[in-house]
Length: 282
Image 1 (cartoon, helix red, strand yellow):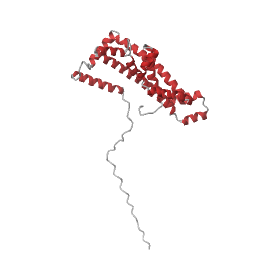
Image 2: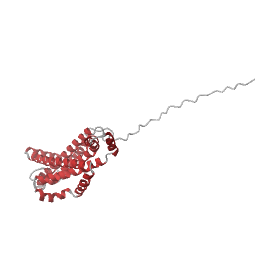
Image 3: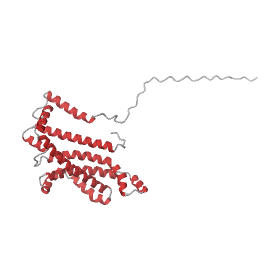
Image 4: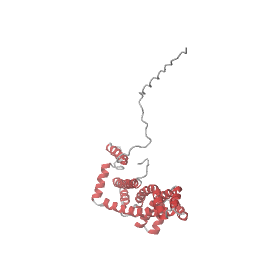
C-alpha cells in the first residue's frame, strides 16, 4: 500500500505597506519664471539707499537721498533741460548703434561664410578689438573733427565688435552635418543662408546684440564729456564743476533706466524669435 504524502503550501504573508514618507526629488531646473523678476535687484538697492538716507548714514552732499534726486530730476525735466539732453543722447546712441549693428552683421556674414572673407576680415577685427576703443578718440578727432561725427563713429565701433565676434562664433559653430544635409537636398546658396545659417547664428547674434546695446550707452557717457554742448554726459560734466551730486545721480539713473529697458527689449525679441529653443531661461 502506497502512502500518499500531502504537502501543505503556506502562502507568504503580504508585505506590510511602507509608511515612510516619500520625499519628492528636487528638480534641477531653475523653476518657473517670476514676473518682473529683473526689477527685484534694482528695487532692493533703491530700498537700501532710501533706508540709509533716512537713517542719516549717508552724507547728503556726496550721496543725496532718492527723493532729492527725484525732485531734481522733475525740476530739470520741467525746465526742459533734461528732455533736450535725453533727446540728444538718444539720437547719438541710435545713429551709432544702427551703423555698428549693420557693420557687425555684414562683416560676420562675409567672414563666416567665406574663407577669403575670413582671411581679410577676421584678423583686422581681432586687431581692432585688442586696441582700447576709447584710446582711438584722439585719432578720430584729428580725422573727423570734434563734432558729432567722431562721437557716432566711436559708438559704432564699440557696438560692432561684440556683434561681429558673437555672430561669427555662432556661424563657425554650426554643425557641419547641416551643411552636408543642405548639399544633399540641393539647396541654393541663398536658401542655405536663409534656412540653415541664419537660424543657427541667431542665438550668438542676440548675445552680441545685448553687449552692443550696453556698449553704446557706456561709450556715450564718455564721449558726451568731450567738447559737447548737450547730452546727459555733458549735463553730468557740468554738474561736476559745480558740485551738484544730485544732478550727476539723475544722469546715472537715466543711463541705468535706458540700459535696463533696452536690454529687456532685446531679451523679449530674442524669446519671441527663438521660441523654438528650449533652454534653462525658458
